[in-house]
Amino acid sequence: MSIRQFFFAASLLLALPAQAQAPASEAVSLNQALSAARNNLDVALARNALAAARADVQSADRAPFPVLTAKLGQMDLQNGIGDGNFMTEKRVDKSLGMDWTWERGNKRELRTLTAERAAAAAQADLDDVRIQQLLATQAGFYNLLAAQERLQQVAQIERSAAQLAMSAQKRVQAGDLAAQDAARTEIEAQRARSERQLAELDRQRAALLLWQFTGLPTPPDKLQAQTDWPALTGDMTLVQNLDALVDARPDVRAAQARLQAAQAALDGSTAQRRSDITWGASYDHYPGTSTALIELRMQMPLQWGYSYQGEIARATAQLAQAQDALERTRRQAHGELQRLQQEALNAAQRARMYEVDILPRARKVAEGAELAYAKGAMSLTDLLDARRTLRATLLDALTARTDQAKAAGAWQLRTQVATSTPATPSH
Image (tube, rainbow, N blue to C red; front, side, top):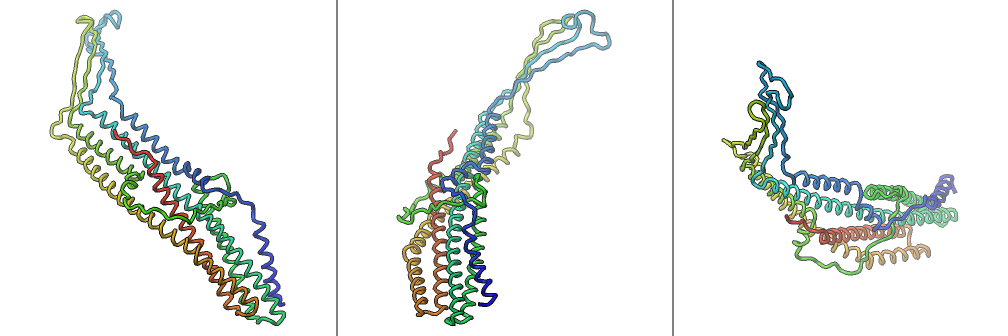
């Protein structure tokens, strides 16, 4: 054995037990990940936005405050204000009054209705953000699970390639194999090691992404997904009429609530044409003339030449914008549900095909190639081709299983969560 071959074989032996020394990981189930995602930072931000919108309802649902006025007047600076007690004898007109604005045209009700529907939109936004986080977390969980299994498969392929390379070196020493063929097995072993390192990097990336969505206390380098693949048996029921599911989606409900808020805002802008009236009364005390004087007053703006056309035009444009946004959201929701349904159906069929037909046949072919090569009935080139085919099939089957899990989970979340969320309350 040459020095290069010796060091290569030694490196293979050292690489194999390295995986057994990996730090212990903490397995997390799908339900644990989804439970953590329901209250992550993005959901907390949306919840705070909802609290602010509900506070706006309290701010809107109040009448104008009365205004208290205290006044000192009729003070004669030339002749003086006289002698005696300031409150009862000095010639100073003392006045205490109260003014209150009467809002006409149901301005308070319309203002409150606008805020309530904006709060309903914020509630629907919170539901939509939560669903988005659940979808992302579920996809991240299955990506991590797939990365773990891919790492296991690639590690097994690496061990098999290392064993084949070591066996080839022994056969070269015995004169039973050409050195060129042994070099090919070394190259395959090195490629397998490189693929294992890349698979480990993919697993670390998937774990970090899942940790970012969930904020679990487990460190990302120790985070591991429990084996929790959905069942491949059973066919999903094809939903022909998606209108009910579309209307129940939180993003559609949010757009509907914003349309209602825009309509209430337009009504509120139109109501400004009815001028508010400010009523007031004052009690006056003026020694020498009378100690008990009453003043009654009324004020209202005179809308000459302007009837809030700008505010009404802006509210009308915003209403049209909300209508277009609702129509766009409905179309996007309908298209997404159709896509999710087709993806779930096709991914399930593809995953079952690999699980039932393609993968068993690939394993059988690879086992036959291993047996034939051991008996000398197959060349090394054919054996390596059979191994490459099995490796590619294993990874393709894992990809199909991952796509099926993510598609089925996305369809389930988009339908079950949407229908279980309460609809926007009407005013």
